[in-house]
Image 1: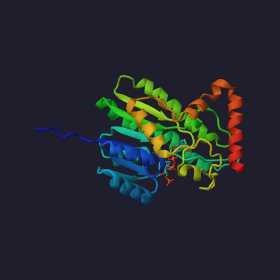
Image 2 (image 1 turned 90 degrees about the horizontal axis):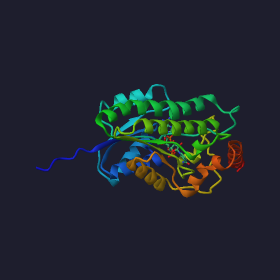
Image 3 (image 1 turned 135 degrees about the vertical axis):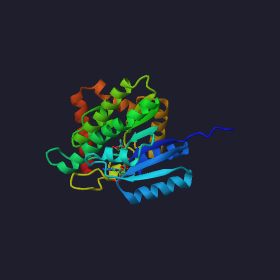
Amino acid sequence: MKKEQKSKTALITGAASGLGFELALLLAKDDHDLIMVDVDAEKLAKAKEEILKNKSCKIQLINKDLSTCNVAREIFEAVEGRSIDVLINNAGFGVFGSFNDTDWKREAEMLNLHVITTTHLTKLVLKGMVARGHGRILNMSSLAAFQPGPLMSLYYASKAYILSFSEAIANELKGTGVTVTVLCPGQTKTCFQEVVSNGVGKTSSENKINFNVACPKAVAKYGYEAMQKGKIVAIPGNINKLLSKLPRFVSRRTATAVIRRIQEKNRDA
Ligand SMILES: NC(=O)c1ccc[n+]([C@@H]2O[C@H](COP(=O)([O-])OP(=O)(O)OC[C@H]3O[C@@H](n4cnc5c(N)ncnc54)[C@H](OP(=O)(O)O)[C@@H]3O)[C@@H](O)[C@H]2O)c1
């Protein structure tokens, strides 16, 4: 008798749009059941409908604000002990402006989401993965992780945290069957560009430097394949790979000044 193959389960945060949605679609096409987490219930329901048009699979929706305290534990409890084979910590947003002027509440939410929730959810899911001897984790960083970013100082710093944290635990997990990949995209055409917040609320500050902007499908596919191969740091695009090495060719101070010029151009555009 043919043994029925058990489908794998993937948990994706920020799965209602952009890169998270594209990653969820790839996972569904690759026979995973999905646990999709996002802050907007209506967008989540639409994303589920869209995925089911492409592929039949089981989808659990979890509507949570990932920037709140202890939300990783609430998500973990909501999945009720299901084995998670793939964890994608993707949700994120940016806050634009000079550190002296930006709104602390929005910044604290961003730090909670990028740093605390990403770390806590990884810790909670990892234990089961290690015990079962397999698992894939994909954490969403950014090209912003490779140097300081004036006018988006905390966004850049939090993405540097995700890069450093992911590389360190990837090393610790060697030989366990669990891999950690950190995806570092450059500019990608998603809602992210439209909702970089000035700290007061969401503003339409469309990034005007439209050089080297990638399509979310291509970035997600690159990240997905890197995760499947167990690659540690994944930077999509040759220009981005080169830009990530900028601080090796010029001083860190110069690299920081270059980013400041770019951010000022974005602000003035
Ligand atoms: N796009 C880029 O240029 C770019 C470049 C490098 C890295 N990234 C990273 O890629 C990741 C995905 O961004 P994206 O470009 O795909 O942007 P996106 O289209 O805005 O997708 C982000 C998703 O996360 C959700 N989200 C935001 N805050 C949340 C919260 N507190 N709780 C739960 N869900 C939340 C958003 O919901 P709402 O829209 O309802 O808020 C949205 O569905 C982020 O971590 C971002 O930093 C993006």
